Length: 487
Image (cartoon, rainbow, N blue to C red; front, side, top):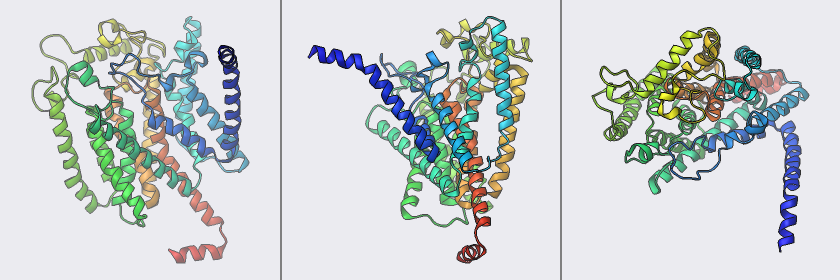
């Protein structure tokens, strides 16, 4: 038996290499024929796997798929998979002789890539390791958002593909929310429970990772628009049931996450969704839906804050107990962290402290004690500004403005069956605004890739609309007449 095991262990590395080679060949073949299948696999990973074990008391809480391979390849294996999928989709689009869909985000992403290249050059002259200059604690994750946006535009080329994508997202959101609620009701909830495990707050929660709530918001938006908008043909009974289940399950999952950023983001997303409806339907939603969601959030907020040490006072002051300056006593660590980072930015306003930099005084912050101490702060906007200066701030604002102007125009032109997906993209970005202001989204691969996914949705929806119009224009006259008569 021992010789057999010895042979197996000796051959195992070769078996793994051979299996990876076979899978690569199969993946390339599938990607050249149906590139959206590679996109589905990639999205499913980001939808289903947590990116953090913060708050988990288990000694062995499992590996993080989002960091695998980064030790040898500078970037995780997932990003190299993304690059390979993009290459397959680009070649497939070339063979089909399809024009590249317009996207006004490309110049701004190229600007981020050029800025990162300049930081790499500066790191070389300053004797900083390349790994530190390209680390996710800088702003390289912003550059990696571009391949995902482009992959989705290349992969989902027709109206049928776009509808398929919206249903895929809705099913994934429903499945993730159902899993979170079942674990909350039957078991102990999410094991990554920083409130119970570290702050002695006796609550269970569905998901601590904000990205699971983001997926729920995107699915919720698609379901809500499909259910309540006017002018859309009624879906089958099955899909109507899925939409109602998604609407209820995802809302409950977000509320029971006990994340303040998720609660505020949910209310912002509901406002975005409401403005997709006519005035009468919008009024109904704001009068009945928003207060109901607000009441649910208020109930769970009281339950959490009543057990939170330091959450004194009343009203809004109690809700943001750790984010405001104090008149007396020591400053809260979150405010102190922002003040240190702001002081360093003011010392280097044009270029920032570099993608590899650490802000001065980070040793005084409790959560900055590890090897990554000083490389991140609890504000996505300030993080980018600190690391890249006013140049990065200009690129960030330009990217945001380009997305907003296109999405605003797209939502007025999309047909009823595609407006849900376009709305979901804007609602997802609105949902993440609180986390981008006071959270740590930029160093997190899962967060930035899901932000890229949300940004791509209005463009994908418009691409499906353009493809449908092109196909209709290319159809023979008698077929177009029959199609118009059937409408």
